[in-house]
Length: 417
Image (cartoon, rainbow, N blue to C red):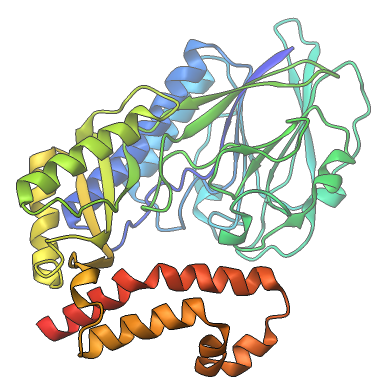
């Protein structure tokens, strides 16, 4: 049996564009801290090998500070007798022109930057082979070939065999959010007969197959509000011919969270909004798979929608900016981003029903269309005629029944401008 630490998509020196200078500096330092914590875990366990499945760097503009940090961490693993197998990805492709090839790595740091698979034999203290690791890297930023198809089949059924690749696996969760580099299928990976595949490229940590032999470690730290929750790597125990034992391990202290605030009808003051935001954020953090992080390490996006007395005030970008600053300060979080999603003033629909003005006429039309197919067909004859399924027509009637408040809110909001 061997134990390995599977990392991927570290993206050191990510630019974090659109953030303030201080926040960018904090996020880049946090990335380095997360990698240092991963090395701490590898030494503490200890593991037999660390694999990094591509995109160790965000691009070739690596700072001298980060380069020195990387060499220090690699030397720590070298001193602990833990080899590192690092394959290149689309952000950090191989070749003499790229930064990684010029770094003075320790002897136990194995740098794989060619698309032709290379098999490394890991040996134990007695010199016997304890595992085979086959890896391939990206030689360019736009690797369009199926690299997995060229991996050799396993030859020794009694020794664990691991594949390492930065790849786009068809059918994986969130795969459509990433470019189609080194595309392959589950069948391509299964064909090699390996005990475990350590993959990079997709930033959501996940098992790709039902047997849980193919894994994305996810990225080491979130890079945007779209990448929420705890981030880290995978601690994997592998025995030849047996399902791997995979344990997610969080390494990043800094994390993004998105909190939807859509029940704001009774929230009329900033203080009340703060209380709701804090409560919902803490509930979101408590629901996670790991211990609740310190609020000072959280970047949170609040998405506000639905009826709210605060809608008129927040229909202004300067007011939203001020709200972000106040919430960030009062909640004690690292950063706040407020997104307004169809936030509307609360309205009493019944007050307008039957009245002789535009809102009353609109409500009357909606009511008649929901009750009378002939009215609905007259409003949009082509669309109605194309609906052959009664289920679709019933769905439209149901939708119309929920439009009353939205229609009046929009009209009221328009008249208030």
